[in-house]
Length: 383
Image (cartoon, rainbow, N blue to C red; front, side, top):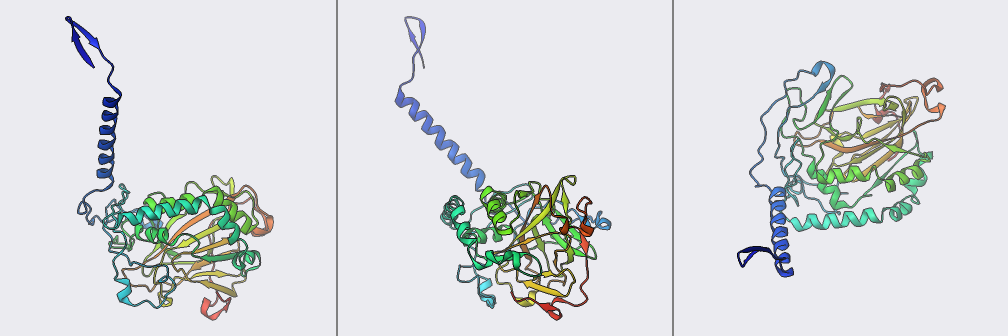
């Protein structure tokens, strides 16, 4: 503070009360600014009419143009609803807990309703993460976990409702059901889309909204890695920070993924792909929609179908013979899609028995196979 005394300028130290008042004003101003940034007006995002030019269709890869989307309201579900596979259309029309906007370049979550609910979800998620080690220790004692290595047609299992229901619901809402398509039939909001004879699917590899990013980060965390290592009996698992082929997968109506064994190497062939994990995000999924994840035996005589219901976590060991996919075109309504989070895990070495001709030094690309009969007519393992 400046003051004048006898014609001289004197510098006086501000009082503690004045300094405290100044800091309080700055804090309030900063808080208001952050709130405005993270809560844009509801009508600032409109559906984009930008279409893809389809210039990459010959290679099977389609990169959509940038566009903001306002997805339709997804169904609100409670924990008791999730096992109701015969839900009526009236249930599907219920309002969501949160309305949201998503854009490839603007990943803000705009809370238009019940903001306190989202804060409760964040607190519940934090509590889950902090206690995840104890939770996974109990999960590893269940029949689903202890049967992993002996399950047919290859080591696998699934768990229902592993993660807090509230955050799974919000993730489902963050990934919009398709509202606009490219001329090739791909979701306009997808980062990449494959349209070939063997697959028709879309994916997002790094442009995730808030809760989706929370889940993917946790699936790469130490507690989750320890859980997978104990479950699969594969040590020193490494997650893929680049989400190569993983991230968010979305299959629209008439989409499919033929039966295949995955590529087996990554990062300039330095790591071997060993474990696949899928978290499905499909509420009110009816059997007639199709899209069941089919696991096939090495001789393609035996199949186990797994329903992609919301909250289901599927884990399986992957090698040159772990055939899987959902080969038949989806028959879901046009406003629905098959959504999942996919994560892949690697090690520096692997047993030779898991590789074609017992040779694990050669990189294997995706291998497509064609069972002689559909899953419904083959030897089926009950789910």
